[in-house]
Image (tube, rainbow over the protein chains, first blue to last red):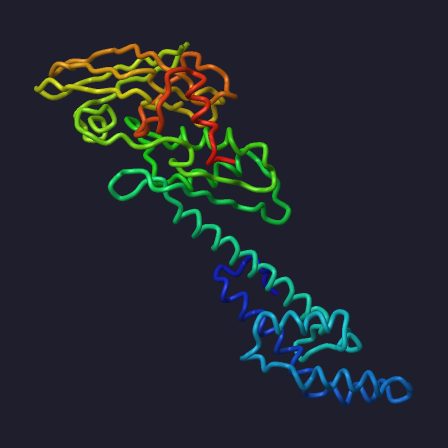
Length: 232
Length: 102
């Protein structure tokens, strides 16, 4: 079986999970009741179990229509629920139903992680400090919670910060991005539960618009900055 | 009080009038440094003749209270100036740490 990380497209993870689900679905709908009766016919309490099991079979979604939630629900029933009795049974592919169930969980966990990452990425890319006309936009703040097994680090912060402040210049001649990155870090580095970013307005700066201003002259190429030294 | 040493070059044939406004931010060139960024302490107005260069020494205040002082490290002009009035280092730190950022 392919590793879940090998699926480049999040939708293909769902399709692979659907295939795993269909293996469980077709085994139980084709032979589940018969195999249950064969296995438990001598047990007194089996009627109550059978009632619960058949109720679950009746509510199973068809593979083509099953949602991720439906698939996860069935995977859990296989691993520790009303389908657990067939845990070690094998589908036509020769794989146990419990392995198909674990496969569903793994694929859908990876899918959820990717969706979360995409949502974070969209939020980071839509974050703005500057408007189209170069003025600062109103105050914006964004919080990126730490992902599972992720700990706060300066490297992690810088990775997000370069995306968050992508609309602020950083060229040889004119910048602003490093100021925002460092100043925001100064304000947020004590919070280790995630990464918080404030845009230029919340970091108390505005852009300098107007003829003869150094920033404008440099931006328009009327002046070239040969060097800037920050000193005591 | 800190200093920003700024060398500008005018490659055109025309003289260029240049205003460095009070609060103009100068940032560190390298993101890894934990040194303060600086803001011009007052307005400066200079004329840079055509085909020439000029070095200015600007009085400046620091914008990052918890960072180390600059020590002659390379910097960069930015598009920003401080959004607020200040007359002292403490005024500037008050602006930078005022509400809005948590």
